[in-house]
Amino acid sequence: MRTILLAMAAAAIPSVSFAQTQLDRMETVSEAMTEAMVVMMVREMEANGADAAPLMETLPDMVWDDAMRDAGRCILERYSDAIGDSGVETMLTNMEAYNAEIEALGENNVTISDLPEPEDMLPEGLSEQQSMEITQSCGMMELQLQRMKESGFSDAMMNAAQ
Image (cartoon, rainbow, N blue to C red):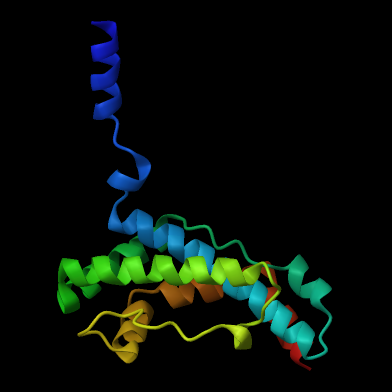
């Protein structure tokens, strides 16, 4: 009887991957992709002769907070309005696949210019321009740029570019 009760209790606890919401998935992939892209930008600057040390010292923390989750919710709602829930699922799956590709490449010290173009990242019915407009209108770009400014990364990038 105890075994049955334990099995029922375990079945009642959803697994992380199964119960993960669209927002959770978007948060996870966004944090990983943004972090990888920022590091690849540093590598790009270093490949062009910049000192990477000040850039690495000022890497922004891209872990989502409540404001970023609110922006993520807004983005998902707008995407859902434009392409439906199944389109959002397709997009998240594509983002996760591309992120896995980026993570694999990142181990080889690649730069932004080394990245392959994401194929079919956006599902049918959503253009890159629409995606950018949604991301911007929901405030996500502003939040990410703010993080870069607050950490000193933006200034370090400007100094490295000179």
